[in-house]
Length: 441
Image (cartoon, rainbow, N blue to C red; front, side, top):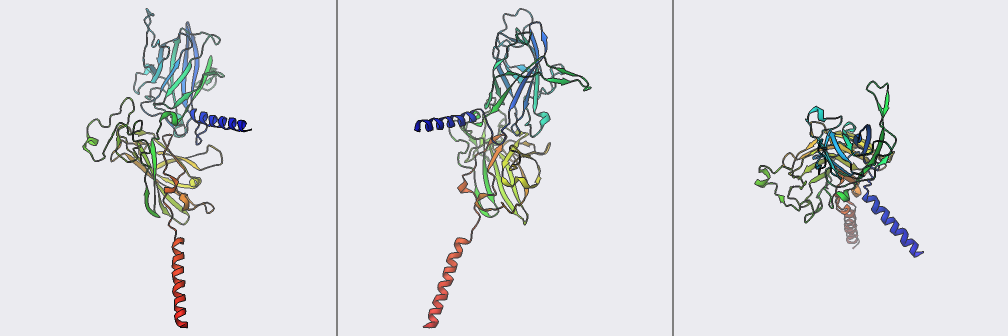
């Protein structure tokens, strides 16, 4: 029996570990990036395919410098040409005497084209520098596509071999892709919507994100304050790592130093290495939640997001909060708000993001590197309280990564007069008893 219990425990641990590895997100359980290949025509030595990347993650987008998709060919295929994207390396094409392929590598890596390329190199949903919006924020922009002409490949449904070992950088690590599988062919409608056509062959695969694979440390932290307590609960010290491997491993700049104003300090590096402002927490981003005001039927919280990274600005940023009172949001000031309902009737999670052309860009560290808003929520008499840290969120995500929360025992507490009342009553009773004894005497 003990061996059976031990085996069950090991199986449970392995299951939990594997679920983390493949990137299960409890606040977005169905979130993934689906890559679909539609063969739209055959060629003398291969096929032409339309590759579509759809981001079905509600609040995690792919920011600059954009995505990179890679795979391994099953045989000795080559890429003759591409529209809307390009391979990062051509590889060894020396065996071709005339008509040099676009890429001869067995493991090509493909990136999106930049905006503004000539029209004959563009295709629908391409050329956005690899930036793909989150599905919950902008569904129309949550897709990217390119066309590829493959040679030295099969020329029928039975002879085509599917590519293998897909990888996705978005833009850094964190994504794990499954194998490609043949699915029913995609159906298209003509522009007049009176005729339906379909792909000659279709296969698809899904990629999921794991924060543990992306980074050993969090990329953001949370601090708290309230009107009913003068204590400000800061981010934990070294919340995002201070030493080797942490976000502050490359050193930092004091906010008031001359180096912070020097030319080139805001230039990003190819490896994505941040340059942070020196703080005790050493996080690229801090989210502050302040319980601001209390009304008869409502209460108000203020949210402030601060960027401490001198090399990165965050376009189309998203902030996700989990709080039981988000089911009664009355008004959100200067942010967009969208409820997230991953489990149907449970409405305790919401996504905040910036207003277009107003504050949807979080600038680099400095005087303009912050955005803020306030949230007005209606009280529910059955659950509302300021005690036990109830007014603070349970989880905070920034750009799809979970932020480091303060320890629960450090939350601003509600002043309680009960412990002080007992000594006062005891003192009054003692005084009354003393007066009575004096009168009797």
